[in-house]
Length: 110
Length: 113
Image 1 (tube, rainbow over the protein chains, first blue to last red):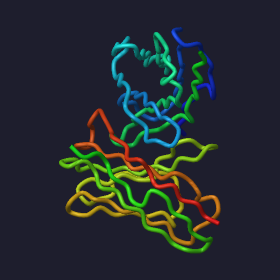
Image 2: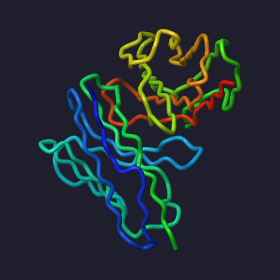
Image 3: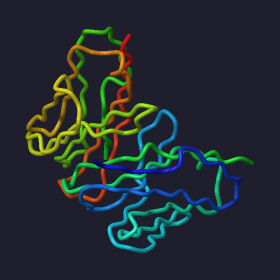
């Protein structure tokens, strides 16, 4: 079966750095995605990793280690608007079939 | 450029009824996937359509079905509704199969009473 694990909830302070981890076990791997979802809204695409290493995009960076089945999303200089759920998703053998984790709810406090 | 449009946004149905949800992908996108999102289970893949054909299917009972039209718009149908079908139903569109990015619609919030 497919298994994607991420912490349920995290709290961090405005201006700080937070790392959200994701581990996965899937049949096949064709990329790992991070999405941000504010309450009541659609998920929005943040990042995509298919090769090992770090992808940086402004305040957000995402890391992948395929051998370890592990990824993290790093958010720097946290802002209050970063309070949201962060979804880790793996694309398996079938290109448009994504397996999602349950999401990590990030609470940013002043 | 218009985003992914899902209708209706909210729906209340009673047990045993059936429901049809609609998704219009971004213009030029040919792949549409459907997901069910519940607090306990997270986002779960229902099925994916590309060029009017179902390409992938998740682990949902046969009460959940879908189709795609020649203009890439997709519909999802749930028959004999159960209380547990209450969820946010999201569709995502991408240009082709194998594309790196999928764009989600706002979802349809279905409540079964």
